[in-house]
Length: 352
Image (cartoon, rainbow, N blue to C red; front, side, top):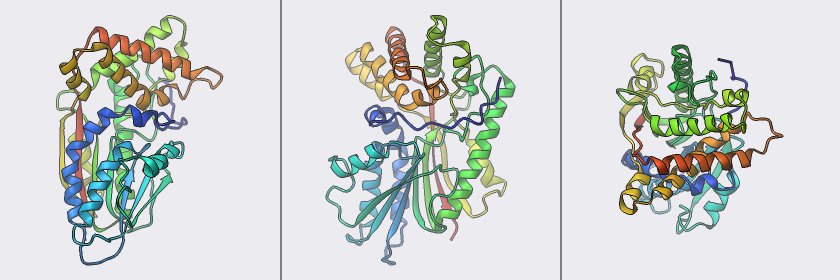
């Protein structure tokens, strides 16, 4: 094992690729929408001041459009002219060009048919404060908080250290998950207005295992095949350790139960089985090749940048990613299965 903490976490694949291949993430966030609706309904209808929604980890925005539209309409249920600003945040390397293009031109944009809505974006990690103290009415984060601030350790036996056989490696992951979670909560505690709410949905951990083992295993084995064929070196594959992992309900509840975030109240927390929209489509069509393509393209868009970020820049990363994507698609086509994983949904309130 080696220490990779100096490496930066990469954003999702750019040029709109993540927007085009994030159907799984779109399905995941649906379970958190009722919590977002509750948060929007709780906004003070009589103050008349502008309302601020922060979208933490927005990526290229495709999966933010419908949730933001829903929240805006509910906030305006008693005042159709209520001013709302939406601040999308992500890493500085994020493809904000695709986000703003979507807002301006796409029929799904929450700006369509809505006056007095003011979008903006900030390129900064959500592990630190992004917006002024006491300025956020609603925080929303979907499919983002399983990404860590850094990968604490590289391992030889998997692309995700949380699946490693090494007890020390898994403990290192859990330590960073705990530190990052407290950093995130403290930053949001400062940013939220009294009574403001934060709604989150992201990859969780199941009661008897992490979940997502089948897909993560296929992804890693495809990389191992490339190493065996000389397309990647052992040094390169060692550095391919993803800075992501799910948290359990107990891990998420701990800061609230131990008084580490005294201004925040945990109103709702659940880990539930995640949907698999690609498998549902396969059940209708029987097209295993399309199932493979859908999963492989999603994994490339979401995970490819971080796996290949630490390969020397002189290497043709896009060609290597093409090769990996084709191998992963073929593996899934040959052995189609439903993915078994978990998502967390939670609602947090800042005390008045």
